[in-house]
Amino acid sequence: MARSSGANFWPEDSTCISCLHQQSANSVIYVAFGSHTMLDKRQFKELALGLELSKRPFLWAVRPDLTSGEAIEYPNEFLERVASRGRMVRWATHDVLTHPSIACFLTHCGWNSTTEGLSAGVPLLCWPYFGDQFINQSYVCDVWKVGLRLNPAESGLISRDDIKEVATRSVSNGGDSLKNLEDFLEKIRHEDFLCYLFN
Image 1: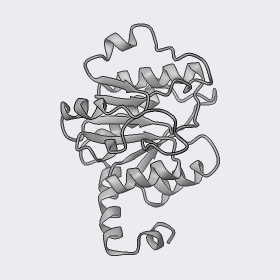
Image 2 (image 1 turned 30 degrees about the horizontal axis):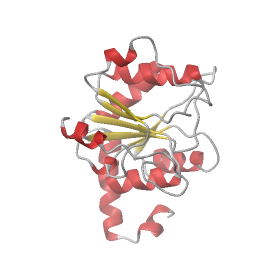
Image 3 (image 1 turned 90 degrees about the vertical axis):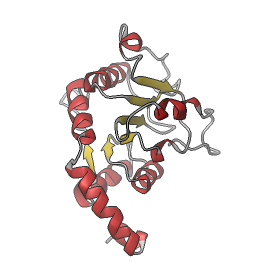
Image 4 (image 1 turned 60 degrees about the horizontal axis):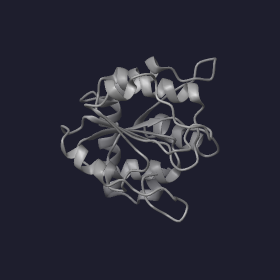
């Protein structure tokens, strides 16, 4: 997810931490899809516009190959419109999730990303793509109830309005996901972590 490993060849961008220092506590939407997920060009633009519509500060890990091998192309004038609150990096440093400004994590639900988000105490916005990511999403949203799912429309796209709505709900103070996450973390502090996860 955000950690350098043998499977990740993108250099970490440490400047994102200084940007997070400038944001209020629990205000930033962090978006990262790991090292393999790819979006088509239309979905990439819907995500960008959804983040813009949320009117929240965001940090978005945008790999150069995130859009199915095509060059990254943002919506017209998107970068100018979000310049005061949006930050795009190729790969974020491993300690982003524990920064106090992070309010939620929009993730592909890979196991590493899921456990890192839970360990950091951050509600998850779940956008799985393949394999066990859908199982992880089910645990996050239906069993532990510490996150929200993004559901594609009949077209297969997740719309900018849905992205905005889910992100805004998650960032809201006192949201159900945050309360459930606090309860979840309290339980695992007193129980064996793996036994609780799969109980």
